Length: 628
Ligand code: ADP
Ligand code: MG
Ligand code: ZN
Image (cartoon, rainbow, N blue to C red; front, side, top):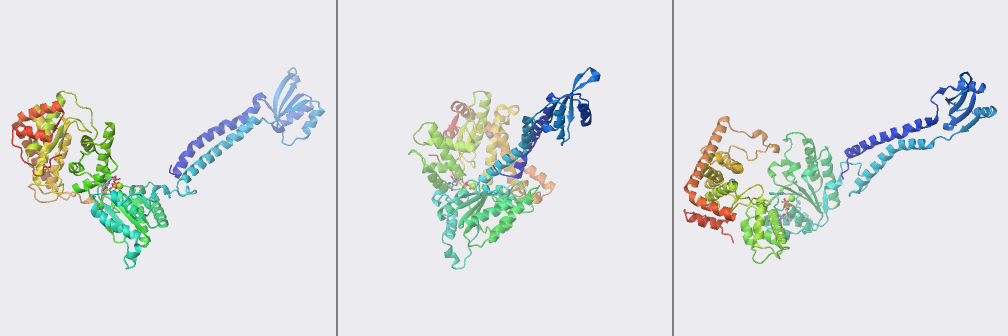
């Protein structure tokens, strides 16, 4: 558990309350107790002495160490009735006992009723005891974490927040498909291993390297591999862990991290998600920026604070280099940027080879085929894919992973878990038409990616799915390709409308329409693919919380805005018309495909194309890669 004063306060509140009740409960009886066999009527001391004089007292019981007496006296006026009266005695009345003896009055002393008193004392003590015990445990627990005792008081210095690995055990061989990055980072390893080589000729060893790339491409892995290759300790912390509720905590964490690192130099400091703390200063929206800025300033100070040749190299990772504060990117800080991108087909193959090392694959499995099937997959996706396949293999009690497991695993990684099959009925029929609608457009339009398979087995959120083989070259997309995609995405709704009529269309097309609108809008505002001409009308990132671009977003007039809307609508309407046409023109083959789909649940791309080819001309797809 993390220690903070808030915790202490939270813990001691119940203790306070409990303590108060115990105190009330235990202390009060010690007063009330004594009176259990006493008279409630009181008599003054002077009166008591008078009674003694008058010989009216018959017996005296002394309580409370001689400070209180219960006196039995007779009242001659009332028929000698016995009265019990309570008398408070003065603290010092040593002669009282002798006087009682003289008068031959029976008297007795009673020891103080100790049970009550003990409980009273305990009751008073319980509260502080509880508090002390509670605090003791809290302190002990918080000083169990590395960093030694006594740190509970320095609550900002929670040293457990960064981790240190003396040996990462990761080597460059474990990272595949990012050869350029590896080459550049090889140099960093040399800096750490043989700094003399550089310092001898007066070179300043860089302090920071920024790894830039989408999530899952192996940035963390690369940083660990550098430490592993150089044989130095690896300190890591995530940028989001700097950003704390208390102002100043993040900054003190940075200080701690660098202090520890200096003690262990040469070493690597790895800061993941540096954009969480290193965002452009003074541009944030809402509160909490003071903290982030202080942390960032501390980070900059620390980076300037040590000499370049102390053997500490800071590696930071981000997928948003554009939002980073320019001060971070200045020479002397993260002046080197290394891109780590999603792998291409060759990269995917070598990543698969790395992760297949410890898996049992049957001979028929071709890693090459998997690599070809998985454009856009990152290293993390591929690792996950092989692991899912291994899990499926174990579940099916097979000896080794075979191609069907791989196929299922790809589907699962892309679209989520398989759901229960639909029951036959109208809605299954409608979904079948919807999917065949997508697939038929995908098959007949030349610029559309080819169909890989159509299935009615639900997965994730989708109730039916049409899979397309994406092209390898994901970089540049032509206008014709985007239009083909829009038409294809509208194919589902078009089929619903043409076959079942306007009244029967369903919500199933919601996702499709969202994508369609997005693509059409980008054609107009980003790629200059409409009659508005080659103009960029929107900045790339419109997420408000990034702060930086907030003020510069709408750069165009209302008139342009309505023209954008009109263009978007024209594109979408045109594509929708085309899709509807296609449904009407190919009604016969569509009906046949739907019957087959309902019967078989899945039709693969080749079979689909063959059937369509019996009725219409199927264009050759340029980048068509047959599945193995
Ligand atoms: P990032 O930090 O870029 O988000 P990670 O380094 O955390 O990605 O990658 C997560 C996991 O994915 C790694 O532990 C590794 O198993 C796998 N992985 C990612 N990229 C690669 C790669 N290039 N080569 C081998 N494995 C990779
Ligand atoms: Mg990572
Ligand atoms: Zn759809």
